[in-house]
Length: 114
View 1 (spheres, rainbow, N blue to C red):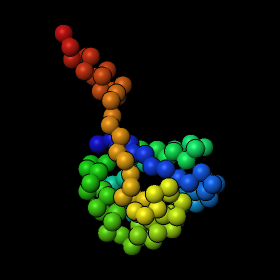
View 2: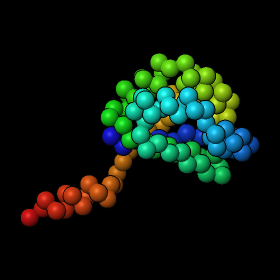
View 3: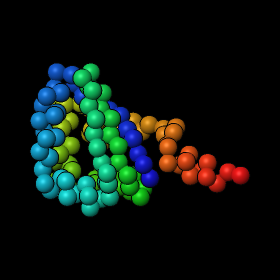
View 4: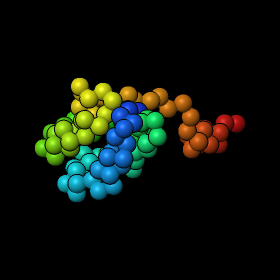
């Protein structure tokens, strides 16, 4: 399963967001991997738009596994003040984006056409 989501960082706090993500806590990195967050990347635009991408077996299950970890609770609390909508934990405020095109899937589908 491929998942893409968006969120928003306060523009005045972009450098702090970048700084924190330049050296994510090793225990957070391990928890993400153990919870099934594979090929996980974050992209940040200068206006605060944050796009995330990951691959997992089941996104709801991967999120639930992270929610059970102490390190995730601590990380979300640390990050919350940087987001535009800081009244919800950052990982609960993600807006999932619809995938409308995938090159590999269309190439495979094209090979199966008569």
